[in-house]
Length: 180
Image 1: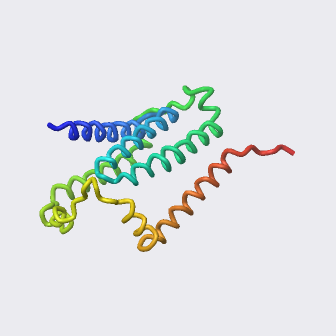
Image 2: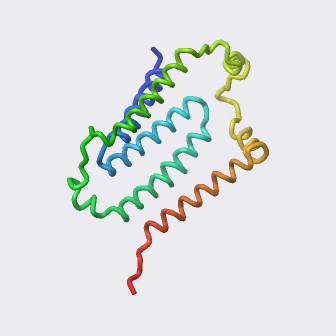
Image 3: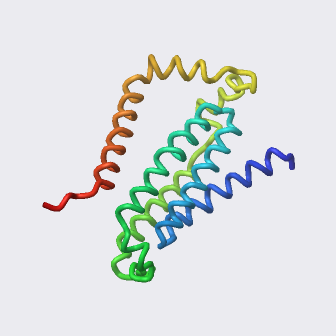
């Protein structure tokens, strides 16, 4: 096995394991820091797919902005959890978790059925993959910039509005109420 494959499998295992732990952990502080590991590992995977701009954007926007915002919002709004972490312990199994487990099981069954019934050789973009393979010397940022400002301008602006709303919501949660 080549060194690139080993590093790719390490990043993939980090993404899967840390994302699973984010969902399973009860301690919200640890879950946020594992989300940090997940986002950095995803950036590493983007580098391997020659999507360098997406990897840098992942680190700057998600790791540098959104995750730090989540940490500050959590720390400013949940002081009771930080003072008494044992008070928030909830049992992992219970009748109230049954509907969520049933829905998750059904989604997993559908996912497995789709994977088993799919035929990758019949998918058009996989057939044409050999013709449009990226090379490390390709200028992908140039093509990405042209597409963002022409073809995908509306989704780009919608995402910017959503990020602005997230910042406004975080500022609202973090502000202190004045007592009159």
